[in-house]
Amino acid sequence: MKWLLVAVIAAATTLSDVLQAAAMKRHGEIRDFRPGALGRALALLARNKLIVASVAAMAVSFFAFIALLSVADLSFSVPATAASYVLETVLAKYLLKEPVTLGRWAGASLVACGVALLAL
Amino acid sequence: MAHALVRAASPLLGTHGLRRKTRFFTVLVVLTSVCGNFSLGWGMRQVGSLIAVSPLAYVRAVFNPFVALGISLLILWLFSHMALLSWADLSYVLPITSIGYALSALAGKLFLHEEISPWRWAGILLIMAGVALVARTAPHRAGGASVSPGVES
Image (cartoon, rainbow over all chains, first blue to last red; front, side, top):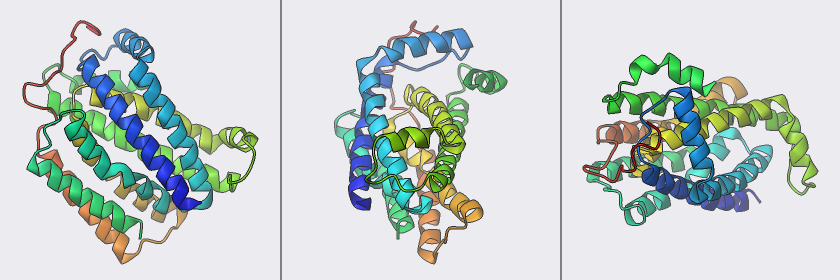
């Protein structure tokens, strides 16, 4: 049961992050942090299909996450959700066409190993 | 609340200070996720096991004050995460914000008295090293596709 929840969380988180990143890349850099401007940007984003799909995936991941928290330690649950980590970096490179440099790969691998150790 | 925070920090957010802006939102993303997850973890201990129960159990869980606080913090997390992703690459944001995993483990030890084995300490050190490595790369692709201005200006 624990691992089924971890799988659901990993898949939903990956989907949510990639959709969100794609949407925000298209939207462009947020430069104006005055409340009115932020509100307008938010209203615009709330109608963005990618953001809506991303939030839906996030909701799935969230309910699976609190179910996991109800049966497992926080220090198991949080690192376990990073199972999606490497997959997301690969998707960032090939789907979002991000320049994943050697430094980023090395850093991402270190973090992934570290997260795996946390789950022990 | 997000507005007040951002306004309070507006001296940090010069239009040209991409690095500073990135640092500020990274801290916000990490803090909201660590505190949010911690609050959820605390609340779910009080709520008890959710597995193999009706959907009503989830509704009841949401009304636990710690779960509610956790959800509010995670909404704030969502907004700051979206803002960060509007100028920084996902492959930059992911490793950088993963410092939160290390902080979550420490919060679990300090406040929930969960055990941190030597392996977990080693994991925390590796995460910190990875974060330090990625933090040295530029947050954004060179000459990238940060288009569609005028939307929020």
